[in-house]
Length: 448
Image 1 (cartoon, rainbow, N blue to C red):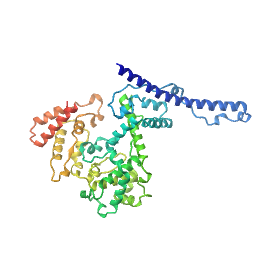
Image 2 (tube, rainbow, N blue to C red):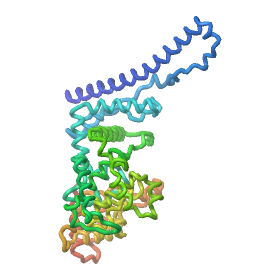
Image 3 (cartoon, rainbow, N blue to C red):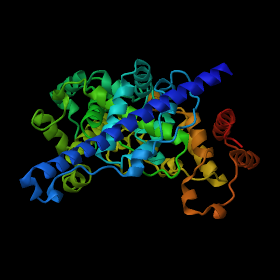
Image 4 (cartoon, rainbow, N blue to C red):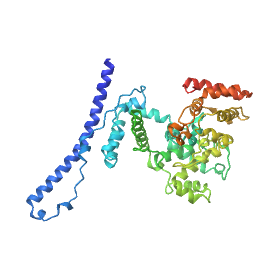
């Protein structure tokens, strides 16, 4: 009981602090407006010249609406989060409604200033900064960006010995640039056309190409994606926490990027030989169109990533974004291209609703992909938790095409797996895949 009272008191104090700051900001604007009006009034009353001047021509800041001055964001319910998490370390449950604050400040420049100030203050907390660093460093940039499931399916479902993380791309950008330049001096590293040579992975520093591309994207080329601040209708407390968390993550990355030397930025002026070579990798017939769609900077990063895949970097070999802000197709050149470019994989990557036919196709594909290969480096390890959630956890893509009362009745994963076991499916690898899937789906409580 005492802990609950202390938590409630902490929330009340934090919310009061937020409201006090917001009230002070709004009050300051009002005070400035009043002072300007008093000065103008005094001039008109005492200065004969001012009396003849059209007062309406004076530039006066527009005061905020009276209602905005009177309103304050409503306090949010206190939510529980694990110790050490970003939500707990940064006290995100105590933040006011993101959307209400934006409405009070009209989502304009004043809100942007308010947001920057609050995020900066939050990052000054050692506990908050430590939690953010641990979370972001372990995150995969492609999954963090929030692309559609079919765009990031490879990173979500395939487990790598050397995964792509923010920690990896921020570890040594200067060293990565130096190794890329070293590879440029080695003719065997300058693959052309659709050439691949995965044996050159170490000699030609394949990972450096990938790291340097992602570093430039996130620090200089608009790699970060800011979610819309006005697209939530009646947002929940959980959505409010998520929105503040996203902005804090972006602020942390921006702060991290500021710690690196500006000379690391890939530009034609600084590195003419490298940029010219990278641009030459783009199909001449597609250059103009691709530059209009994605911009030259983004295309240079994409070409770095695809070249990393040609040289054997497995993370680069999983990239196959569809649309969005960037375009790279390293999956065409990586070790798993035989699977990732197939129609079976594309069908699996879509977030379709469960069905017997879909599951049958999926588990045949998973069984085939999981089989032993002549070269063990070509064997694929799947993240079965992602597979289970992808297949069994709504929402599913077709849902957007129906009204609530028109949704077709969906079968559970348990029902579908039971049907498959009762069928004349006598393929041992498929049954082993079903057993693994069933075990994980039960543990995640998404099976029924």
